[in-house]
Each structure stands twice: as structure tokens, then as C-alpha cells.
Length: 242
Image (cartoon, rainbow, N blue to C red; front, side, top):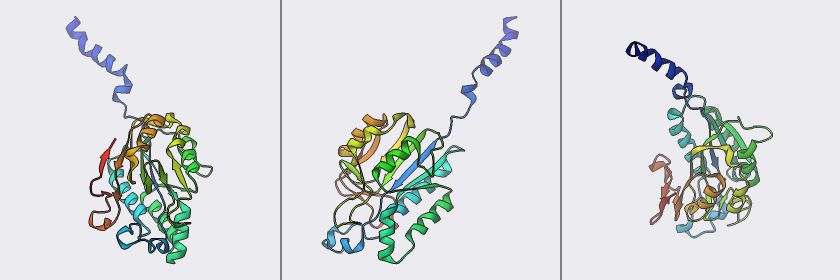
């Protein structure tokens, strides 16, 4: 009798556990791009120190990353691109090119939510609740990656754009405590592709969000990206840590 009933008992047990057969909930994956320097300021550097001459370093690397991630993502994943607008507006005037429109073309190609940033506070606000024009979808953040200038203590959304060798828009590690850790999915993938993040800021990120952030000890290198399919490289002596 027990032997005949066993298959039905197994089926009943399986149907009683729908979460085992259900696909995990999709989430929101966020990439953030800082702005480029102005060429007039880069030309003041010695030739061996000029490293941010092309306007699209932080745009093309993010674009390629979206291209890598999307085919592997779960259906229903929301893709968001946070971009520091002021840097591209200033560089557009210098280059005489519609750089903001170029960013919008990436949005159209990859079906992204494009959210413009003016300050580091805007970045915190979006992670916590979204922007006035683009509320968050209410899904957990399953990934966050940053492309741009940084030092060991902050993301520099702007550097050498409004003023030479100065950042006028940043997110400091001490500001991270204002992030809502409930916005992130468990084991969200986080990485900074900027310089020196792994030396201090990654620890503050983990403390604030509960998520590890991969960052560099040392400098990262965006130069000659066309030779590496726009993958961000490590400078000599640098390494990734988490």
C-alpha cells in the first residue's frame, strides 16, 4: 500500500513547494558612467600623464558591458544607465559633437532606462527610490558597476571638466551610509572600474550595502580600449580585490 502511494506523495510534496520550481525574480542591473575631461585641460599635462583624451572612454566601456550582460540575464531584467550629464555637455561644446545624443542612441539600441546625474546625491537618490522622471521599478538591484574617474575615497563623476584637475561632482565613501541596503538583492554583483576603489571605498560600500564591491588596488587603464574590445585594463602593478 505504501509503495503504491509513494509516487502520489512525492507529487503532492513537490506541488506544496512552488518556490522550488519557480524562476528567481529578475532584478535591476545598473551601470554608472562618469564624465570625460576637457581636452584643453588634458593638454596641460605632460604627454605621459594624458589619459582621458577621448570623450567616450566611460561610455563605450559601459556600452560593451551591457552587450556582454544582456544575453546572459534573466528574462524581465531591468537595465538602467546612470550618466553624469554635465561632463558630456561641456565636452560636446568643445568637440562640436552631439555627445548627449550619442548617449541616447545607446539607450535606444540596448533598451535602457537612461537617467542623467548632476551630483553624487542623485546617484544615492536613484538607488534608494529612483528619480522624479524615472522611478525605480521596485525590483532588487542585482548588479551595480561604475565606469569613470575615482580615487581611493570616492567616485569622481566629474574630473577636469569644469576646472583643471578638480572634481565638481562626486560620491564620497562617507556618503554611502545613506544608501538603503534593502535596495540590493542578496549577493548582488558590484564592481568599480575606476582607479584605487579597492584601497578604501570598497570597504565602505560593503559596510553600507552588505554587498562586496570588486575594486582596483592601483590604477585602471581605459587607454587603447579599441585594442581590447573596450575592456578596462589594470595598470602595471595594480590588481583586483574584493
